[in-house]
Image (cartoon, rainbow, N blue to C red; front, side, top):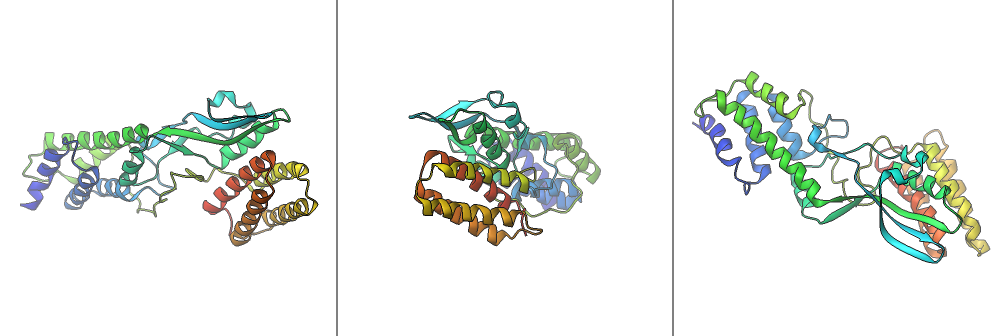
Length: 313
């Protein structure tokens, strides 16, 4: 009677807030297998394993653009964790902001993120937006570490929506099917289509993995092009003038030229780009200087994001 108890078990446990969401989704995997519903099975599997970068995401996994925060320098005055809205950025910089944040992570990873008070994210477009913003500021002003900030409760809300979708889905099935029987495949597929909003008929793709936290969070295919990356290098080159040590200045220009040559190659090498980015970071750390450090930070973040998204061979 295992088939008969599966639907009843889901109905019994789904309203218990202490019941792990991952456990309920694994039961959905079994229910999908028993009923022949690939839609239910793949939805549960993607929620458990994470969505691939090319997968169509349910609407509840798309967050609106969150607030921005940054560290700023004005003359000798430094300020940290200043909050901005997207409308405070120059129009050209706003063009590089994403309209939404897709969440590809498995539910168990989102549960860990949800326990944190707040998180900071950046991506290639935001790095370039920072560069454009700094171009419009005065000579003794600088914006650094421009990032999105999201509260952990936002991720808790996403998990709550996953649980709500599951409740609605099971409620539909138990309304028309006795608990001792299995629902028809067509009924399960219809419930998934109605409540999840995505019909899953493709094979699961490899998860994007834990890319939601840290410097290169939420990197996507809409990041920097090679030309954009070269503009970031130009911003570093403009800051080299503040370096007084002749040998250090020569080192910086040498690695900048080598990086630019690699980016303009027919097939840029990931290994070469990573090595030269590391060299650029090392020199800037040794030389110091607020303007140079900010420019190098932006270039390093942008190029690292391109590497992480597979932009190079």
